[in-house]
Image 1: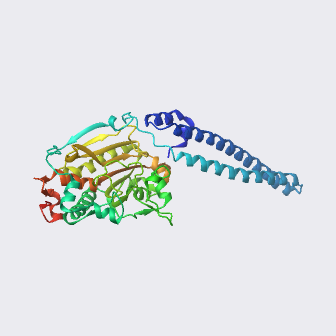
Image 2: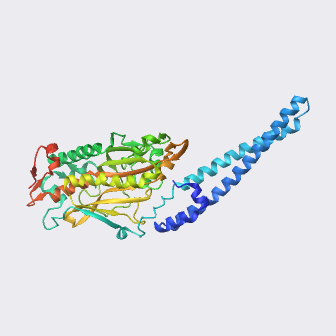
Image 3: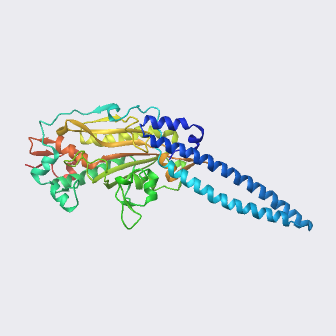
Length: 425
């Protein structure tokens, strides 16, 4: 959530951010309504403060008159009248504040000045590449062809059990997925992250704290009879672990990591990546989260990104790092790097991790602060996939494929797998 003082004092900063993000006209009307509601709220609040001061003055006079035996009936009557008005104003200010803050939840984070300005992913900036892309579409079968030939990825039974965009993995492919999860967590805990096993269901307040609600409600799965939502990413429970809390400054940065399945309806994504595991309604991911001091959050973003990259380097999978432009950056993020892994069958890089600095945007929504020299400040929150397991699995099935019939196991996973390869055809 944005700081209301920015909107009061420098609304042009928010207007400019919305323009850079290429947000629709509705967003500018929301901003205007927030400003109008805030002016009303401050005017009513000022009246309340003036009335409280007047009532206090009357009460002092009443007390003095009672001490001298004088009648204070007039003052008592006036004080009661003021108290009634203060009560009415309190209801009014609460209503205005609730409506204003509800609209504030609809505005995105302000991109950092260093973020490239652009309308869509075509304006993203490549930062660096790692590894050599040795295979292309002519050299390999796609991961879904591997699944169909071997039966190790069963899309038909996934549809039978659930619906389209669900799959069953079997045998060495299922074991490879489990090996990747264990490997990713093991590496990140050596980087100082504390492993967390969070709930896979969270309440509305928790979803709101990280920015999934109210904006992305249509992309989420909700339980019918309970105030519970299935997590779209472990970022949601990890960030909200500290909701409403004050963290000791000496504890910063706090680094946590978790594996969860992730559930996304992706209501606006139909027609994209229909075949295979690229875009599923249920997928596995290891998530990295940091709570940092505001002065160090951008340095921490660089190190978090490198922590995610380390997984790909150890797996010896070619990838590139891309800085997202203003039109492609996420709702809660001020700056984001995507890690994109090479997918030979598509002759292109595909996102396998997004590493973002959300500055104080989520901390304001979830009310997460730290105490510095006796003063309370909002922490900065960062998150990044470390990594999306399914897409990493796809990259292994294709980049490590030999003669369109065998998949070699990356060296770092062979102890987990108990094998050096498996044959699928």
